Image 1 (cartoon, helix red, strand yellow):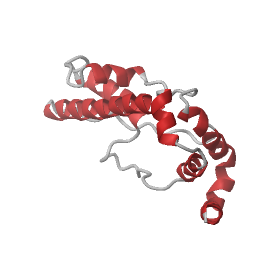
Image 2: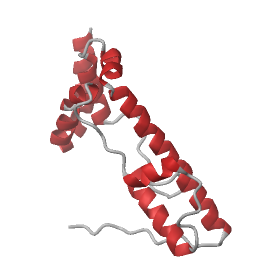
Image 3: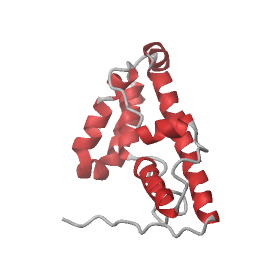
Image 4: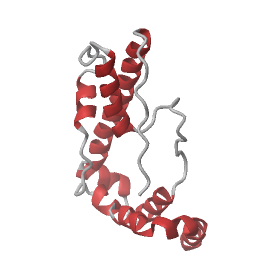
Length: 158
């Protein structure tokens, strides 16, 4: 049954896999290393700072500082809800591939807890939550002061 499900999921994901097969394969292959805490995801400094004090008045003196701080958070967190940029939610090829690989690891949840990977993931998630709170706070301060948002930088097509 599991083999049939895996085959069906891979058939569903085949078109997307063809586009970025190397990246998906690398991410899926790293799942066991993440589960035993050998591959750690570093928390970006801007999120560590936000976790220390999401409502700090630092970098709120003027619109330039606010826009810079917001851009730093956007670079790490991705676009905000009202940015006009489509957010990718739900199933992705990478998440499906990682789930398939993870399903073959017996007692995965226990392994993640014992190795410290689950705790590291909780710390990372808490830092992201603090970064989201910080961004909301900064956006509120900027709006209250009448700051115009910094122009969105569009990447040049190579």
